[in-house]
Structure formats: structure tokens, C-alpha cells
Image (cartoon, rainbow, N blue to C red; front, side, top):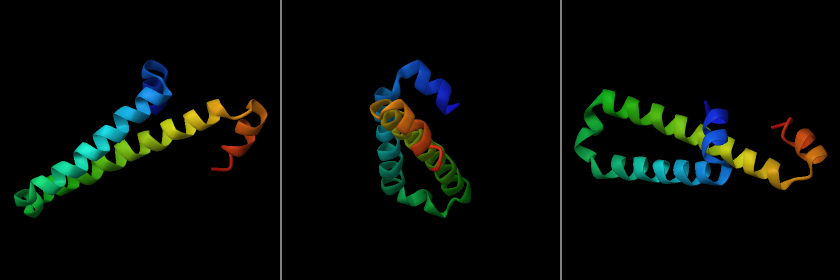
Length: 80
């Protein structure tokens, strides 16, 4: 899913979108303190946050691989 989204939007744009959504999600958790007792709300927050964070890391690695020399990026990011 991350690869398809990066191919569609581009690495930098995807990074910006995911970073904005992670910030918005964290702010929503802080503003809606009344829902903290609801297990479904907290579980959904954790699941969506982990998904957005994973997409954020994928786009960050894709951006770093574009900047690096091709031989180095293939070897360097294989170990991550």
C-alpha cells in the first residue's frame, strides 16, 4: 500500500501528507479527552497512528534512497 501511494503522490508529498495526518491524529487525541474511556476510540487511534507512522517511515526511506547514490542506497537500506 505504501509503495502504491508513494508512486501516485511522490515521496515528498506523501511524507508531508503523513506528517500532517499524524499531527492531526495526535491533536485529536488530546482534544477529545472525553473519549479516552472508550476502548474502541483508543484502539482505533492506536491502529491508525501505527499505519500513518509506518507510511511516514516508508516515505522517509524512499526519499533517502532517492538522494543516495544507487549502489549505496540498495545496500544501506537493505539492512534497515
